[in-house]
Image (cartoon, rainbow, N blue to C red; front, side):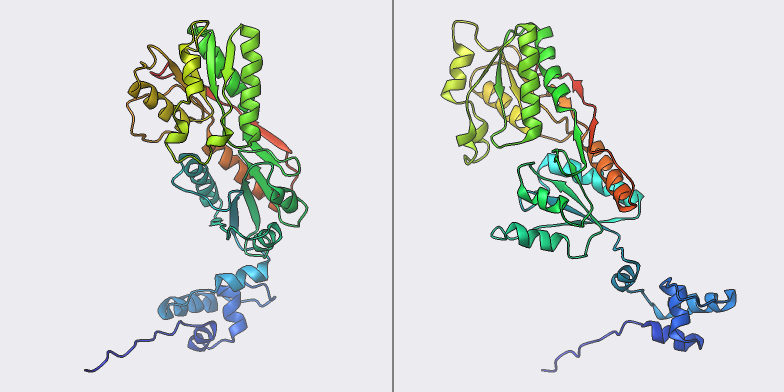
Length: 346
């Protein structure tokens, strides 16, 4: 049986183009790779070089060209969770904003991942090895890598979570917490169950603190059950109400008639669990979320939520990073507005 012969296609080189036109490679490089050698090229020769490149299928070596310019045209994106789960609506919304803003500026996006056992020093080395011009960090503020990046030569901007040492673009979380409780107060709720994040986030803490403070001013009781131990429970069980939380909904003295969830996914699962266990939403229990990301969840609920405009946060992050790349001064903290989106769950 005769084996098929392999077909090898050799890519055209700069030298091939130069030979076709009858010029030296330096002249061809001035036209095709935009090198700055001081060589002047006539319009006739320039057109001949471009035509030869088209005929031969020559493609400039973008990596080599970027190294000569000192810029790669790449913006890196890194998550403190060591990987970016694009199935997560929050992450997807941020990435959409990043990609749109980068496309408008002619930049490409590089998503950074790392082995779970990699040290922070190894991660920093991978981020600052010259492949990217700057970095956007989507990471909890407690991540020590943020400080290391801030102290390195790599221009970086944090988005969604504030970093003390990096320019940061965030949503107005405090305003979001106040809007949640004010909305429920207007609808007559005087006791609210708060379901917070199961991991440490500055944004979630700000929301919670603002909600508690505004509730005290309005005379609304906020009750809460400690939930950190549920973080390793598989979804969706981790969002099901615990026995302690159920007791707060059913107590005789001032029962909770509304639930505030720290983000939309938790709110959707919470509302579904309530309906499945005999609680009408919002007839018996109102539910409010946070994020405002327009995605299709397997639920009948039109959720009342806070729209944090995460895509705008991401786009602003790209804007600040490109300004840093031009050595311009940027604000240490940029806070973008949020607004309430009333739905059928309240």
